[in-house]
Image 1 (tube, rainbow, N blue to C red):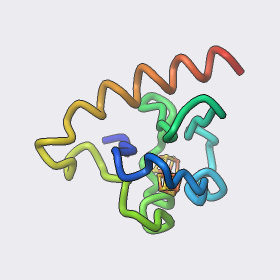
Image 2: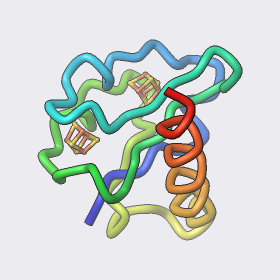
Image 3: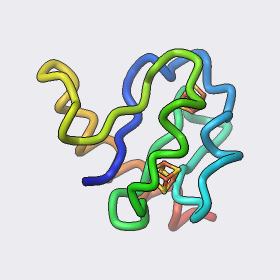
Length: 85
Ligand code: SF4
Ligand code: SF4
């Protein structure tokens, strides 16, 4: 049950979530307009969710239907950024 970052992060990206994640599984890059959570590294601690000022973070169970595409987007992008770093 990993956590998922969704479109509200776009243009905000204040990185509050990055500073509380105990396993550093939230990935950012200057070229990206949002951050992404690596689903295989997230330990479901939930610490990031209340930190987000725009409620962009959901568990995959609570993810609204219209945001389902972000499951794949987080996985693909986090993997890509992880391999770059
Ligand atoms: S739920 Fe915990 S481990 Fe997963 S991204 Fe958020 S802070 Fe990191
Ligand atoms: S706290 Fe929310 S808006 Fe800020 S970077 Fe994380 S997901 Fe994006």
